[in-house]
Length: 200
Image (cartoon, rainbow, N blue to C red; front, side, top):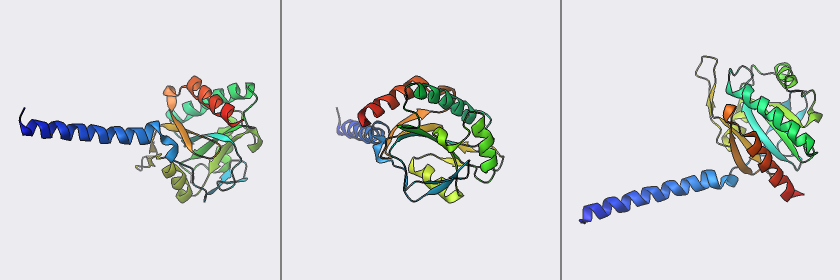
């Protein structure tokens, strides 16, 4: 084996090692991501939701917009089914809450969000599922904190990442779940239950 082959082999291993390290930090150890504490949004029912004064609960965070033609409503529907399972365990609203944040705050005002929430049997903030609207700046700040990407190409269809984020009671990211038809409700339920059992 000549020196060139050795150098190529070493460089390849180095690249693989770096890639594995990035994967470890971003996927296996996602706890480095955390919600910001300097954001205040409004709920669909016109109450403030202050990220600096969050209740000590685990939470599932979804980003969506109400005109989304596919992945968003499917995800919200799956979360609604998950909510019923958690209610049966007696922990929804008490130990865990859901947060749905619109990435189209100009169009998704309180009235629109109320209508969207009602499709999933949410009629007040006391239901344990908060539908939030914020400024463009605050929405992006929360999305950026979880590496959720989105942009409006000007067609009305917003291009966005396809993950839902599960946070612990200290707002550290524990796990990401795929949105849409790939949302694994059983996996999410088991992950939430394991976390709640540790917190109690």
